Length: 249
Image (cartoon, rainbow, N blue to C red):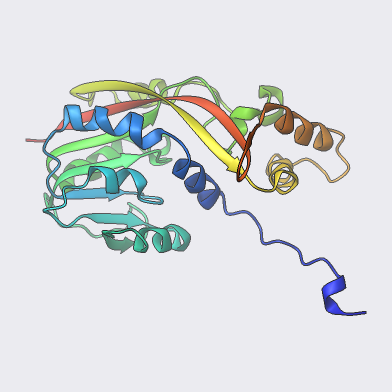
């Protein structure tokens, strides 16, 4: 029997790539970026902290200035390098990244775990790097924030805290409140090319055993929510983001 007769297992899903691919097919940039530009019309030299796939930073960066991205993930750095005007890459996380003080006009951070885990410390770091403005983009809707596509699942399946991220951030900030806040509604639209693979991945991430009866129900649940797309099945999740702006100078 030839080797080709045996199925070749597909590589594990990278959650960062899964999210970045969905941002490619979502209206996130088109809906949220105008709110940032309205509040910060002069971006200047940009530092994008935790840049991910770079879609948002690339849409905001001023082409007359170089921009910089801090990104720990090799997969996301490869994406950033494929951009038409790629940023200067700083490898690592925000805690260890060396960036000169007040070296960038605008410091941007979007969808960062540090918003919730190290709120004040992260803001202090961002302010230290900024000459003029710090911009955070924070989830503002009630719903799960961790597992990608958890918003398609019943809450008793994903069991995530559904408190709006903006509420958690503002509570943690204390007196360091932003000078301005704006909101934008958008739709997280992920095109799924292999639904059984995604369902298997989600069930594994939820910690369900291989014989858990919810596994086939999860796949059927996703199938019922999806919309046919030329590239597969489109799953839409309504989202709301808050744009938080601090004026440094």
